[in-house]
Amino acid sequence: MATGYWGAPNSSIDWCEENYLVTWYVAEFLNSTSSLFITVAGLLPLALHRPLWKHLELRFLLALLSVAVVGLGSVAFHGTLQFRHQMWDEVPMLWTVVVMLYCLLEQQHKIPKYSWKLSLPLA
Image: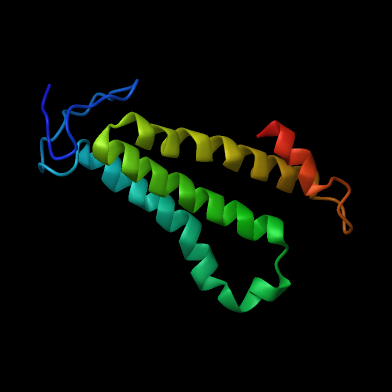
């Protein structure tokens, strides 16, 4: 098992990509690079629709930001293969599911039917 800048991988998962093949600083280069696109997928709509922020409901801003956080956490995990960064990959995915579920539940309501506090126990 290759060891790089971050030390020996101690995560519970090591994907099929060979570790530290491209650079000494990034454990899984292709997974890390593709995770950057997830971050862009969350941030680009925010940048493109900046004039509309005051008209968007908070739930949509949270949904986009949570996707960006998933991407950043995934870059951190696949770049290091460290357990602490694995949690930054997996936990935001759960948060994003809760935010998306809230967005779907509130889709037909002008006045929120479900409080955002409903999603806290789900997280």
